[in-house]
Image 1 (cartoon, one colour):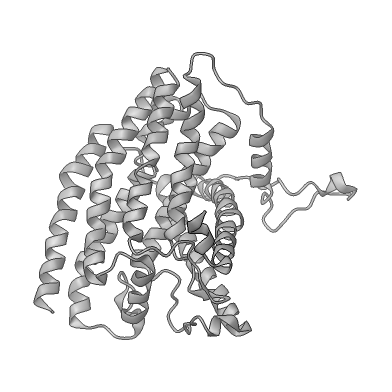
Image 2: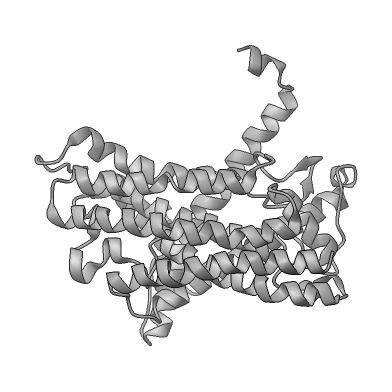
Length: 381
């Protein structure tokens, strides 16, 4: 109580407001409509129709017809959410009940918790648009994200069924393996920025150009040209590792439907299954956000003015802050579309190929890339 009594009431209210905005007004709708986008994009890739009929049931309110918006089918995520909430909760009798119920929560909470340190905007109403602006933001993300594997492993073990168990074993070996290349691929970025704070990482790119596109600040030095090569390597390794960490195809071995029915969540239904679903897509959003922050300038948009704490209190500053937030989530949406595109384009790896790629290629490439970056920084200091 002494700790909370020393905190300014305004700071606590701002943190709660940012958390509610991020989780309930951004992430949860974004999860729902990412699923909708995946179904529509996969339909386009396979030359078929996706969900295009479900609207909003305004006929229940006395209107003559249901409301159809734009392309149609935009009410599908609402219908899916209602189905999960109203569906019967069924727990098989042969499972370990406590851990069976705990696993979906352990899969969802880390994915949402990592979003706390992601700066999704600059300033608005005098507050920085990040829930917790900690000085070790990147370490916090890696530490919390690594806990997500426990939910999957516990789900596979607690189901007392062979297919979920195999899925849990695959998930544990896969996620632990690719965490190494994921962490090592971020080291060159940290060497260049010289800071673990994600807000400072964005500010560095505002001043010096995006790390992946260093010419966005209007000039390109010889040093930036040399560093672009290891940064591109880091981006490729980081993105591939993020696919593996989020169990996205071609790395979806833990839940490969053609082999393991549905993998670790075979025995789950209703809201418990929905929590796994939410956790997977929230992890995709967190991973995409981290890619945007580290390599694509975060909320920064070239030629757009940058507001500060004082100007963000004005109407024009607040509008600019909203534009920054929109820019950030537009970049995240582009990365999510890329995730979806890859899923419906590439075939699934064999498990031995997956492990070989992680240990014999990505790990070594990421490690050598650190020395290349350090050498360039030392030579151009």
